[in-house]
Length: 354
Image 1 (tube, rainbow, N blue to C red):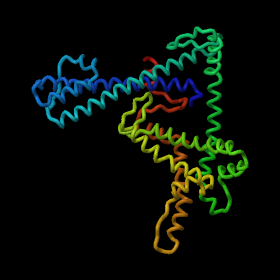
Image 2 (image 1 turned 180 degrees about the horizontal axis):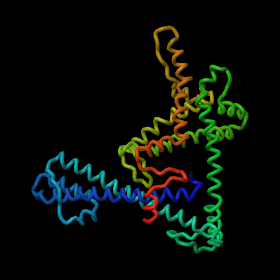
Image 3 (image 1 turned 90 degrees about the vertical axis):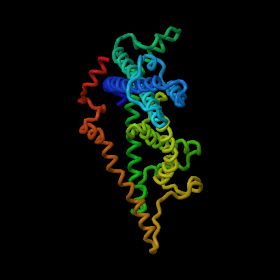
Image 4 (image 1 turned 90 degrees about the horizontal axis):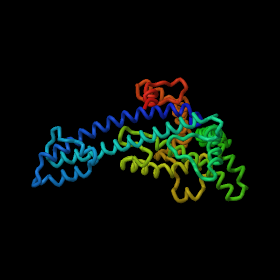
C-alpha cells in the first residue's frame, strides 16, 4: 500500500473530506455547549454559591470561540450535577475539535506532499518542487535535492515492496509455527520453522544469536502493538497521532501493552520449543491447566486444548487475508477507504477540491 503513491493520494483526499466534515460537526456541537455555558453565566449572579463553578467552566472554554458568542442559549439548571455533566461535555467536545482539526491539517499536508512528489517525477530537474517546504539554499542543496528526488520518486517504493515480501514470508512462518507448535508432540516431528532455525544457528556467537532471535520477536511485537494502536472501540478507545489521544485511550492502551508482553514472549518460546528458560523460571508456566479429580483426564484435556486451540486463529487469519472486515463495513454503508484500484467514493472528489 505504501509503495503505491497514487492510491495513497486517493486515501489522503478521502481523509481530508472526512475530517473536514468531522471538524464542522464537532465545532457545531461545541458551539451549542458554549452557548449553554454563556447562558449559565448570564443567569448566575456574582454572589451565587455556584458562581465559582461557572468560572471554572468559563476558564475551560476556548477563548476565541467563547468570546465570539454574543449571548447564551439553551435550557440549563444551575445544579451541581448538571454543571458537572456540562463540564464533562465541554472538555470532551473541545478535545474532539482539536483532534479533528489536527487530523485534517495533517491529511492536507500529506495530500499536498504526495501531489508534489507525483508532479515532480520525471521533470528532468532532479528536484521535487515542494509547496509547503522552503527550498534548500546551502552548498549541498543540489546534491541533497537529487538524493531526495531519487529516493522519493524511485527507490522508496521498491524498498516498501521488498519489505512487503520479507514481512509476508515472516508472517507465513509465524502462522505455520503458531498453528503447529503443539501438534509436533503428536506426530513426533519438529514442524516449527523457528525451532529448526534456532537449533541450526545454536553454535553462532551469542551476540549474533541474540540478534537473529530478536528480529522475529520484534516483528511479532510490532504486529501486535500496531494492531492495538489501530483498534477503535466506538469513542471510548481510539489512539490518535500527534499527541491527540485522550487519557482513557492512553490508559487502556498502556494496560493492554503490559498484558501482551509476557504472553507474547512465552508464545514465541512455545513456537521455538524452548520452555526451560530464565523467563519461565521467573514468570512460571503459563500453560492453561484444567484441574480434574478423575485420574489424568485433566492433564489430557489441557494437552488437547494446547494442541488444537491455536487452530482457531485460522478463520481470523483468512478473514484478514481476504479483507473480509472491510467488505462487511462496506455492506453496512460505513465510510471507510478501501485500498483497491476500483474503489471510488464521493469523498475522494470532495477532498481533492478542498
